[in-house]
Length: 509
Image (cartoon, rainbow, N blue to C red; front, side, top):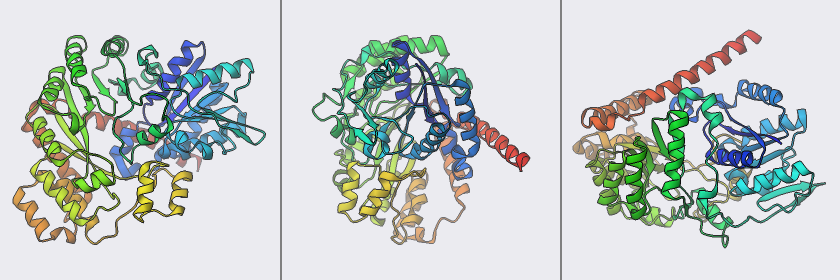
């Protein structure tokens, strides 16, 4: 069969694995990454808000699908892209009646809702390699597909719900992800190679899809599984030979879970691959030896989720057990290294107040990472944070229904209405770049309540210049991998797409 696999905005490693498995089974696949890179979308922010959803991209994609004429189309969706996928799938079903499969974390979260869509024929729940191949094989033979594990289907209005199959613990047996379409279509933007060396996460963060997968796969094997280091190195060697990559992005939830594994990884990666890389860490698994191993391997950038400085919120709302002292030690160890360290901070956590944000600002001022990335906490369908939100009175039953059924781009979040909180946010982010006496003065005297004295454009420019100074002048080794030029390249290409769309609109009108 000829199968098209679709995602929006950025590389989807799950679809790449499914494509590789389908090809191994003798099928033809075309993997399409619709729209421009999500990196450019986030970089340009509000200026290009909505461009990935314009009629321009939809028309372009539909025309491409018409030329391909596939036998089946699969979508990988998360809550942010669900609305886009529904629009495209509806058009596909109306025009050609092609069978449509929805998978991805949103479909796995609310399969009972997704399967009811008139344009969705099948829903793939959980990990999809084996299930998708079995589904396609049976469809090609015209055989009954109603009992394929991980697959929900419907017939004459009746829905067939199937349980998930046991988790595959032999990750080395799965073919390397199929990245041919990505590198053929987006060559000048793909010097970075994305790889995952493990599946699953040992941590039960309430706001993350991993806690949902834990429930889904309860009793079906260990959620955390790892590839052998030799298997990982073999994939990267192949990638270097085929795609001339110059940087590696490890997409594991946490790369540094096992010290013995990191010892093997550091030695073999340095000797056989030798490229700078980015990875995610966790303060509970960081010590001096781990940082030394990362640095020796060539790690350029590492990131972790600080989320909140309140140990109470961290443990009781987010279900993260690490202590502030572990976070402090992590930051200090990386600041002594040549690895660029960034930290995620969450805003609008249930129970977060002005005092907590003040504490966060002081903490970041005393123990500054190289970069702070701010995120609004989003309530994704059927994650544990939903129940906590209901319990704390920040979510209603109507909100939950909206979260599970919404097709808007930005998933549901709450906004704090407490006096001064919104005006505190820029100071929290900028606190790491200001002198201690100035931060204390602003916070103690509550000067932040008057707002930020400059526009947000100047605020972001100040932060950018501060990063360039800290990383580029104080530590030139770190500046070698500062992503400014790459981000500008994405922006320029995105603006070209946007300009062509605007010209097309003007010409038609």
